[in-house]
Length: 356
Image 1: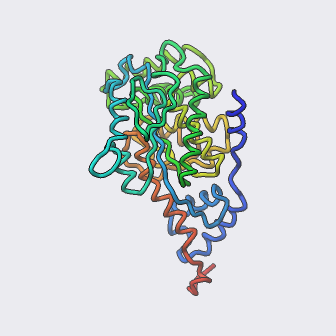
Image 2: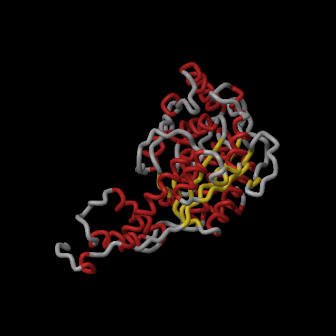
Image 3: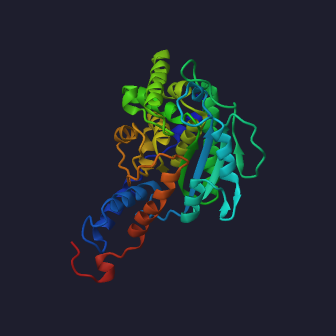
């Protein structure tokens, strides 16, 4: 492990427990019946621990979309060809009548005032120059994880640090809530392999249809993952990521680690992000305190990830698109949780009888 990566991991602080305690005391005094705001109350208290104050005031929201191709896509594990990846990167960056970007994440981000960043983490194509494209690729696509390691550990560390750099930039630009997002044909295969290995589960229980493969495609996908897992018994987190992951997964891991190190909140979108989170919490247990899962997605295995991470999703909308879409949808819930804790008056302040 490089010194820079080790320093990043070691710099993640625990939640501010004093702020958590003050937030819990404040929640109990706000002008509402106890527990009436349900999970928003829990979210608000967690945010107090992240930001170190019983009146958390997160402002900007940024979604950081990392794009990368996967060599395993050639094994027929996706309903779409790898050429989709560079075409979608262009769509993320396109000028449209409604603003920059024509993908779902762009539209949803505009609706909630979030900023979208796009990273080439390892797309297997010559991407045209664009001022908004962050270039971080060290290779054009990963290797086929079913026959060899998808990446070298050195490559993994380079992309983790690149993701961390983009997260730092987003916070400098004013983001207090970061949403790692991804794009990459074949990445649910990589995520399922990581999940199966780290949670010691049978691949069939954590492998879903991804882009929508049929029954034969799903069976083929499971067998590809079984073949990959049989190559090596390693459970070391960084080695598992190198063996079975993807460049965009490594980049998202860096985003999460850096956000936590800077005491910012991280919204987890879905299954692929969950695989990065599993690696991250294995490396830095305190990271889990900064993770807020948007919703349980339609991809098989996501619920197992969240259970292992001891995280409760905010909604269930049957999403499986990726791009950070679910995470952006969840941002207003976090902002509302913080606002109620910060801005509601207590019974004493409002002169309302019934406190205690």
